[in-house]
Amino acid sequence: MEKRTKEWLRQADYDMDTADYMHQGRRHLHAVFMCHLAVERALKGWYYEKRREFPPKSHRLVFLLNEIGVMPPEAHGRFIVRLSEASIPTRYPEDLAKVERDFTGEIVAGILARSREVIAWIKTQL
Image (cartoon, rainbow, N blue to C red):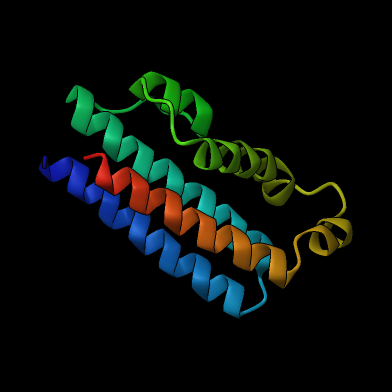
């Protein structure tokens, strides 16, 4: 595995640890943001490993998957779409109180678990 790929994955793991920390501190929106960032970095590591070039400067997870040229298992694909859709309202909430109600601790715990599953799957592909 390329050194840069390992660095992308190390940062993805770091971001997941930060997501856990944010969740424990009840900063659920930031936890979701960090999950998105972690999956994004894992995908960028995969992109680098496959193409040996720096990945596009994009936060769009589905776009990155398409650029890698892979179709994930259905459950992972659905989750990646869901995480992408959560990215904007958690990053730029129009109504903070509403978004906080939408992303409860229980919901975010599920997002954390699924993000770890997706990252683990990405690592098996490298």
